[in-house]
Image (cartoon, rainbow, N blue to C red; front, side):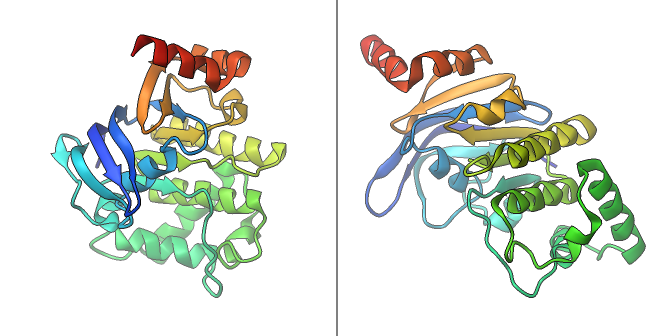
Length: 252
């Protein structure tokens, strides 16, 4: 399973235009990273490209897992390697319960289907760890869920699928403070218990008040223009993106 995700000189375009213009980034299992940037900077494009979304064309560069190039692999093969993407807007699947979806997802990664007893034990542990109402797993996946419930379902998926590195694409978008805290606490618990590595993509500082990343990267115009620690989050809160944009332009 993946212990490192490396992005090398990644250039990505859609039919309309080039979006990523040479991204370099390394995320290792057990590390917490934040990728910040204004709207339109390319953050979600990077997330979707990491997981192999067919709507994005890699024109140069590589995506590597433990040194092996996965740029041509389909999404399900990347998931088997231990990568996970938490969507900004999770899709509803009426008629499929959360529990059944989780069992199917686990079986898709295994040679032999998981036994009913083993699955039940794992699900109970995850529900207790994340402080989720047990009745939640009987509901249809994301069907009629609030924004917070959708994100809670994704954290539960992470707990059950046990990815090594998760990409959270603006998972804080549209959440109230209680839902935000629930998601953040879930990520911290999985980081502590499972050694989860995470790339938290956001343009707000709110979630980073609860999940304090070791590494912070700022993306603008399709490139990572600045790297640092949590001090970058504090600086952004005080100065905003415009000041950093001016500084980057002056040093170019």
